[in-house]
Length: 105
Image 1 (cartoon, one colour):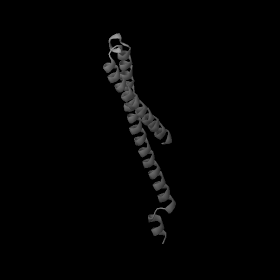
Image 2 (tube, one colour; image 1 turned 60 degrees about the vertical axis):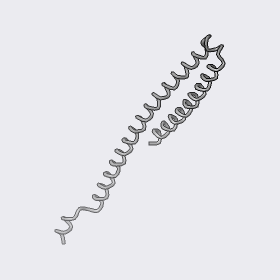
Image 3 (tube, one colour; image 1 turned 90 degrees about the horizontal axis):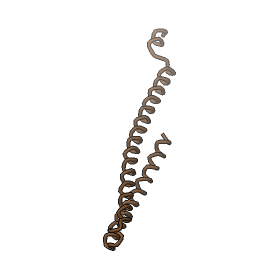
Image 4 (cartoon, one colour; image 1 turned 45 degrees about the vertical axis):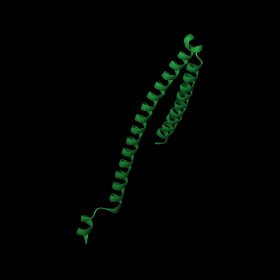
């Protein structure tokens, strides 16, 4: 009887080992998810910067004297500006959601 007990590990040891292993795997998964989200946030920030640059360029064009006297050109640029502003708002909302997810991990 004594020999059988010695061959079998203690149940608490196995349970503790499994808990540590699960905790380690969970931490690895969280780290991986955090890295993916940070990469996504960086890409999103680059897209925001690009959209802001386009908006600035469109605003400059609208202030140009040659453009300001051309009604059709003003309408075209204004429509592009509205589209870029909508795109920028969507990107910023997405960025906020990503940041929120990063904080939750």
